[in-house]
Image 1 (tube, chains in turn blue, cyan):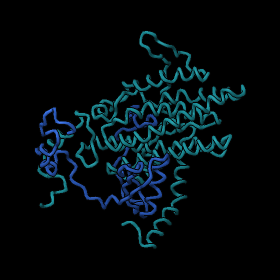
Image 2 (tube, helix red, strand yellow):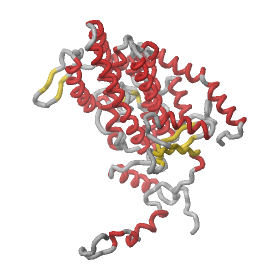
Image 3 (cartoon, chains in turn cyan, brown):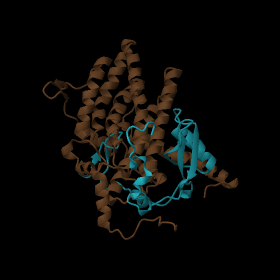
Image 4 (spheres, chains in turn purple, blue):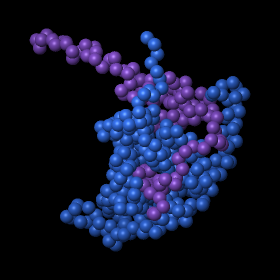
Length: 123
Length: 322
């Protein structure tokens, strides 16, 4: 292969991944109007719903049906939530986000901050 | 308390962002969708994830050809579940690509236009039912070798998709191997059918790992970024070492006269791979390239009315997602 790179890391085998393979989306065509939904599955009673992935659907009800087929083919869950990705409000993504900085120096919020004599039981 | 700014701070200069990215990679932490990332990293991931997704979707076809000819209801149910899984894998991966700014309908268009490719292995036809078993054993086996390290890929959504996929691939490989074991306990004709399928699929399976390391120019960058974890040749060797004992238990001969155990290294040596065939097939001249794309195009075009109807229904009932 002289004109392109070929990598097997696409999982199902070697495919060209060189710079001539286009990656920028071009606006147009089908299903553009189906919004993105984020999907959450409760694995079993007693557990939280956990984010499992996303999909496109024309409305909320269809999103639940599609999520059922896509994420629970093997009893992975007992309950599904879907929410339009556009409706999610998020903090900024950095772990260095100043939003989380105030808790960094409040070590007294953790039980290990306090020294208790060893002969005190059940603490 | 006033609301914190939700958008990325503008004060940080590009170098600081690059340093943070580099530190995240160096610490073997994951990059997440809203993190700053170098443009090359993003593009490499979009290419790789999209083409992996295309491979899963096109990969439904060779086995799908046997759905109506499976020899029993049990085998048909298994095959149906497997083909459905491949569709699911494609969807997980298109989702991951979308977190990088790609659009899945657009990716499908690029596949159909031939501007993005899928794995060359799916350009070979499934001539007999034994091919279904051999695809599970050898092709999905090779996929597992590739995919298990990708569960630790540096891009979070890709790694998480791979974890789901790997759990399901195990079923794929085992059902294929069990199918072959059953046929090998059958008639001489059935055993010959299995051997014939192995003869046709072994070498294309080895090609799935890509060209030798010295002919894989961008691999080093992908390794440095933690997108790729092992070289093509490393993974190929691992696959051969795993497959030879499996072939012995099955009672088939792998079609390579040079295959031999090297006691010194603990690895199996194998013969030269026909890279000309690989290049021929991947550039569009394999036995089934045209058929695969034609069917994918038909699926897009012939089913467009379904997506339009669903949109119209949602709009009419006033619950169209904005």
